[in-house]
Image (cartoon, rainbow, N blue to C red; front, side):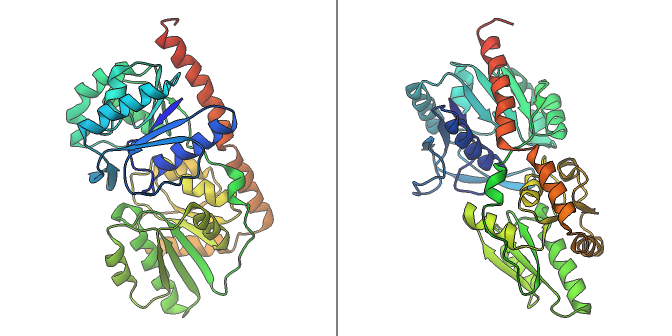
Length: 363
């Protein structure tokens, strides 16, 4: 089968992580997998046995409060269809099927059964204006899923679809394979792209607020890179904030095990809080902003705080540090197990069967 990501695999993002993780799980089950995505660098090694086809020049486009690493090349879209046709899959699975542009030619050809997964929640003028076109293109999907109720509602309003809600999944055992590394200083870790909606500024302000009273008591490690890095470094000043930049998947998982608390301070625009579940699987306490995507993922196993409020975040971190007993951490990990990639792929296999029947006109 073929998985299509409109976003470059080399750039950190939830959609890309889902595509690669799904390819690993499908491959483990004996499925030959192709991934089609935009080209981003000369890096040739990916942590998956899938065939990788990277096509088209990469650009960064503002989208949903973030920057989307995609291609607008019509030639790349045509080449992608040629690569898919040569691979000859029995089904094509489009992640964010209407995002420009690498998968468009393949989607419109509707040459094999097609499944679309919608990750985005929230709408803007571009989505509203494109709604008539999206409703026409939605006819090329034989089945649809969304990663949350909020993403499903967005797809329903903009595309006229009624997708089944299938959570984002992750490979739970990968997050506990490294030994716990206790730090000399109480350490909070934030992971993600450094842009305004990720709320890293709130985490910096909460740390400074606390350390102004208790000098050197906490350290904040910021894992990731992005357009706001320089501004955030200026905001942090000489405080106990360490920026380590973008890291490999292995190093990311090691930081989950080094943290005393993982902080997810995003302000909005998160359709699903996979970072929360990854931290829970790592047996690390979680603090997250009380926004819909994170609230849904937390399931009562994270300490929530009001987004953009450093005082509330500081208090939430104190509460999390005081509730790291074994029973609490084990309960959170067991909860995270229900969101495993293995369980997710089981449910997608059911949806693939629906799509094949629909494509064949059997329903």
